[in-house]
Image (cartoon, protein in one colour):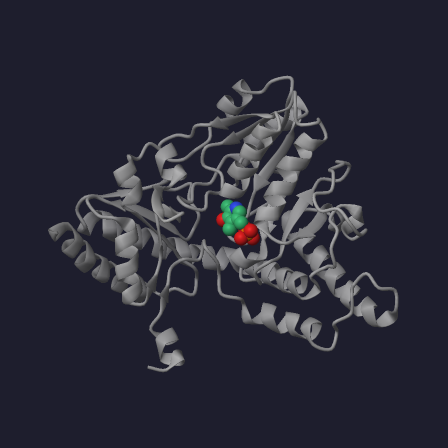
Length: 387
Ligand SMILES: *Cc1c(COP(=O)(O)O)cnc(C)c1O
């Protein structure tokens, strides 16, 4: 089999892990990897072309989230942006006498930086969530203390797709004079994001989750906020984030963000239709199945199901043999299968968590692919439950 035919038979349902690059994004990037290689920070006119391309991308992205261009700080991706937002907020207070409110279902880029902060003397509250994965704004308010510096609640969850009431949580933070950070990596380009309406002070996003290249992201920092740099060095990004600007990546991010936001209304209806078809077919046709996450406050492409009596990771490997790419509800950390912290937080047992499979769809998926995956699943589950 040639590579091309292998690719043709691939069914990709792991868009929450990464997305294929939009051809327009790749095309837009190419000149900045070829002839227009100038350092955007250099002063000669040749480099000015790279600087202008970065400025254009910044303006395009800012417009899509209701921000000003100078509120966008480019980073190496969502993980860096998450680390920067939370760490810097606490650094300003000297880490001690400093309190962070976050949730039990955040991405590891938030959870792990919070653990690091705890070692430095910061107190962190990890709020529980409902069985559908929702954070209760009243609970956020209840946990506010005089020393709370930042509330970090993700806009939409990467595993179960639940969309949080960020606008309300942001309002509480604003009223109390506390910073509100949201990880919008799964949301930006997929659902509407408006930093003003949602009362957001700091927001993380990443290019490769919306059809852009890997290794580039952003932190939105509301005008007037003085956040400490996370990477020290040169004066790039107004002295807040040192390092030569990733001009090709930023250009690709700008193009991908524009396109995915423009196509959102049209495409999300299609994706929701495929998602709901997939969920309802699995829940009605396959016994011992349970949906993880909220039935409607849910990312358009997210399907996360626990399949009683099976190991998600084993099913994943069997699906892979059939050319189907999905994720499971456990993470392989140091050779062991740890059930997902998100699935445990919504009250799933360890076995239920380990039996979960996440399918994340995009507009490029087709209904026949969904039906093919369900047929294959039925066969795999029958075999796994038989042994
Ligand atoms: C993918 C992801 C990240 C990390 O983004 P990178 O650009 O891969 O570092 C952070 N948060 C969420 C919710 C994600 O899905």
